[in-house]
Length: 499
Image (cartoon, rainbow, N blue to C red; front, top):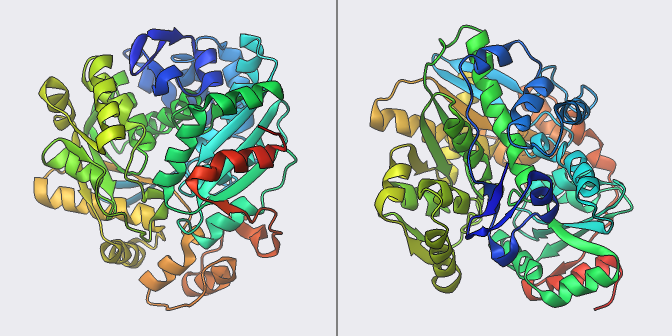
């Protein structure tokens, strides 16, 4: 399969090289030139398979540099019972007539990022061998909370890799921060950034484009790649769980073959909902993709109103910090597909975003997006109400990001009258955000961290996932924080190399 840069089709490679490179030269994102299609009967055949078998089957359609046997072995390792605390790897819970909560956070870091970052290290290690790359892969990630820990956990002590994660110092929950700063492993490094996620992401992109940084790593036997969803190897595994969820509904008799479902996703950097879009383009029967934002509602405006992506707006710290993002990197891939692969248009939009803080989408690309996507946003107060109402009505406890999606899905149904069955992506354990969840349930607290686990258990009778149980006694290893302009120097310090 041919992978091309979203900004220049002349920049092309195979699947293994796309995974090793992470980002295309010139700042574009590698993406398949053509999206593979599901054949008649494929969904029915997948119904009888385990999650890891489904993953191997779907990934084989994209990653043709890897054999089906390789992918089956990787998936079996990544999604084994020793890593996920629910028998089916993910849990699809029926909430009421027509709504299903897709719990994606039963892995080793209690967030949906585990679904991709447990298999990415296996894919990358194999891809390094296939491409003949002998240098150490220096994996860099900017995180709004969950990617960082999932990437650190996935790559900890993996031969041939170093991993460095940057996170907004005051833009993650106490549990998320502790998960990252206490990470074990001889090849890991963590550093805070004084600012928000967009500052961290901008600083990291500057490092990727910095010739001096690349040369310094090269002299020390390393090269840069990414663990963010800009890396195709991070994004592709996320397609699997939407296809798998549809199969589960089909297998259980909740839907009939070919019945269209809606999918609502809490959205920040746009990777998770883009995976649902790619599943749709493969032939998954989808009616609407519902993009759920918090108060940082740049995507709501883009999808719902003018078609203008405007990042020149106030930034808000919310109770759903992993979505506190104004520059959604993976939207670039959507522009590529919606425009029919018009790389000149994508490059024009991305240059305008960098220089002016925004861009206008028009024509057929705009119409294509409007025909499938709906969008809305939820305030902190509305998300809190969704947490409380869901718990009272269904006995299901959800985190603030999932609550945003629940609230937006309800708004969509009320406005549209659409009664199609809806899959709602649940992205993190509520125990990662104890303070916000407790306050939504009417319990005020001054602290925010693992010390609240017992209080949330006492209130609800629920227990923290095993992935979080050891945090109370965790030893903090990384305490540094820098401005985005000093991230490169922090990187060199963490790697113990000179310029």
